[in-house]
Image (cartoon, rainbow, N blue to C red; front, side):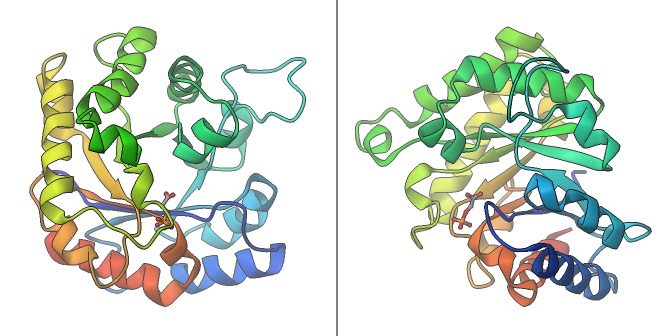
Length: 255
Ligand code: PGA
């Protein structure tokens, strides 16, 4: 049985004050009934981690970061390492988000190295995969997604997803208001699980695969109701506590 998970990717948003307010609203209203059945994670920008961590202390809402360096320490200006994130109480780190890949030059190899470093620091990577519209229209969705997954097997071995979460985020659905239909998403999620199962059956059956890309309170229940969709990685709708909690509630109802 996989516990559903809903993670908020706050991206480059908020101030110290608004991040604390949002985290407080989520932590204080998520308790009753929801948090027992769904794992809730928020991922603020790294300079807000300390304050958000203080708000989440002794609540069931978990803390995540949006990226981590593959290196532990040294001459890597501007980077933050996984062990530094662990010091703030981060239990999750988003790796390989399509914005990192398309805007900041992250490659399959560098994402896999980050994934490996995060797992080695005892943090759970949320490894993002997904195709562009061109990829989909040219029939290459699974080739792209499998090459992204393969990079983790190449770097970490057959059990590279043993303590990880995967997020399927079709690039064309991120921040666009266009959502993959539940059937489109389920098809890819099932193939991701099969691809992992070919390496490690046990990991595949326990692996949580989140959907991301314009998930909102109106479409969440139908998406998360699919057998291989184990929750969501939420961007825009994670910035309003009422919307985020409504998605958490939809996930809890599936548990
Ligand atoms: P969105 O973003 O929900 O705003 O589409 C999802 C993501 O980028 O993780």
